[in-house]
Length: 241
Length: 306
Image (cartoon, rainbow over the protein chains, first blue to last red):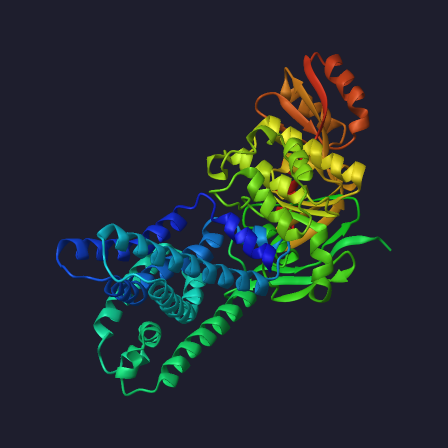
């Protein structure tokens, strides 16, 4: 599996999508940096981290993750490399698993980029209240939210296997981000798989009457269902040339 | 019993009620170059995809190296190199990086090996160029490099010379012949370019509309090519009369056209006698040539008859 992951990283060499995703991960800290330097006074590092985490995991990450998944899986069809890979031969199950692992690593990289760029922007803005503990807690919170969000994107893997074009993924991701914004704060937000990761990670779930176990269950169900249908589809259908 | 590297039994593929491959029984002997010949849409690529496990058969069995692919796929497929249609590589990566991915995943990464295989296909000077900047011919050659990099025992090549210029075709043809004759690699190659198959294959399988009509050796094929003698004469009516008087029948033993050409299909050994009779009758004979039907003419006739 290590070789598979190593090769997935090599496939990203000179990849514009990888660079764009990094820019996407910097965007929430950058926007919040503009906000704190332009409009408000008396902002602290804590507020900056909290806002960045919320906008990243509940909004921007949804769009970025949809694009990443579509690229990771769809490119093998669009660049006709799937037939090359599978005739090496590579087991279809392993191939799918390596893609999931690569996606997870990509998520971790983006989380690190977001957190560190928030830190840098915070210092540039001259905010008060920085502590290492605050940074580590904020990073852990964003990482936890993004990993949970990663799990909820499993059904998107299936969609990207069926519709290999990136445009529907972009439109779907943008649509889902808007849905998240609309749902956030509603009573039934803990039932929406793509909102509850942030609610759980930030602790906001406690404000809702729904048990946290239900939200975990929904995330897990989304992951398992997505994994199962992706695996069935990928291992049992003919490879399109 | 022949040692078959590829053997299929009643192999079929149905796409939404259309049988694109219909119960084919293919036999490819070890060390031979087997040319799969057919028009576009004959089912060649689908057949090859089924052999490579990219497409699942609707029915039938596939045996590679004498073993069922259902049970021994892990053992079988590392011994195969392939190209199906246009080779697929990562566009943002160089030729070398693309081959590195394949070699690493295969578990036999060796930089020397990659460099030498790039040299074989004349891409050693282009190894740092990104795949997206490659011409079609270069992409095809990189596909061949990927297919032969691990010294496979069987090569399955679907239209491998597509996009190659005449020099490239010649080089690849020579390479495939060398791989087969010197290293004993079995090659299954498909093409709709008849002359290519004629040049390279030891055995030819004729496919049309999903059916493998017949498999025949190159020797058998040449025996079955129609032969004829072509006379170009100054007085065609007189020449035809002479042939009729000798008991030859029009459209059976000979045909003619208005440009003074007669094609004789029987009694070919007597062509010198016919020539002498024509000359004696005052006919100028401008050409006497023993001709052979080419593969294209044979294929058209063969497919029509079947």
